[in-house]
Length: 211
Image (cartoon, rainbow, N blue to C red):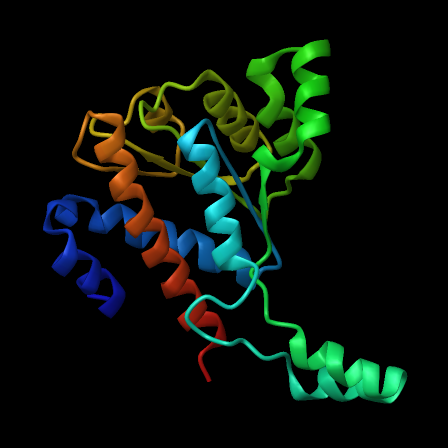
């Protein structure tokens, strides 16, 4: 078993039944990165905050520093001199990810003009391609705007990961893998979502950026 997954289980033994799906999610995410894809992430309420949190861990150094390649560093220095050196020193390797909850003008316009249950689906349609992965977070698994986004993703050939509660809800039928934490109470579900996506972010970072 992956060391990070073992560490997760050591702290949260109640997540033992989720390990297989977490590993499948990791495989999908890593393959997407290696083929030039990106991650689209969405949720409502606390799960919207989780969407932002995940992007924050992926787009900059989390447990590792992620310096840029020496050759690229040198190119910055040659083109821009001292300032280029500063820029290159402060850039970090990124795992491309977009939180769909962040597009406030688009979300409010689309909700007002078209339909609130389609705000994430529209973004998946506009941003997504078949190399990408959509991560839909819903404690119930029944959030209409998340399910609509997943359906659009499936039609576009985008892999889908669900992060939800005990029975998986409706979204389980549409996701390539669904991580269902063994709780029905929203706070308990969200408390387990965080260590799961932290583990995934650490696993990806180690695989991609460890020398």
